[in-house]
Structure formats: structure tokens, C-alpha cells
Image (cartoon, rainbow, N blue to C red; front, top):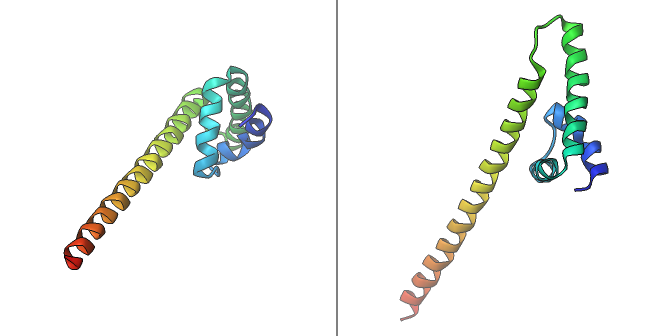
Length: 106
């Protein structure tokens, strides 16, 4: 993901609408690009801050952004673990089936 794609995805990140693949690329780019992380912080503060002011809610936007970023990171880790577990189960199933077929043939 490049900076232009990152900036285009910021509103969807704030709204919680990024799919797994995009969320993973978004997080990787943010960790490597301080300018894009700063842009995310600015857009988050403006978007969420304006909404909170309209609603009259008290808020700590910096903390809330940190929580959203941590949640996104957790989602990516969980999805990756799920994919890896699925791959291991597929391999074990193939090994089991090959052994079973070998047993039937012999």
C-alpha cells in the first residue's frame, strides 16, 4: 500500500469498514510511514472530535485512537492465526487420507 491508498482508506478505517487484507496492509504501511500515521491521527481527531462536539459527549480521542489501532492489530493477528490453523488442518487431513488410502490399497 502506498501513501495515496493509505489516505484513501482512512475514512473506512475510522468507520471500521476495512476488510482483513486492506486492514493488514493499512497497519503495515502505518508502522513504516510516520507521515501517514500523522495524517490518520489528524483525520481521526477531526472526524471523531466534530461528532463528539455535536453530541455533547466527553472524550479522550488520543486514547480512543490507540484503542482502535490495538483492536485492528488484534483482528489481524486473530485472522492470521485462523488461516494458519486452517492450513495445518488441511495438511493433516491430506496426510491422514494418504495413509488411509495406503492402508486400503495394501
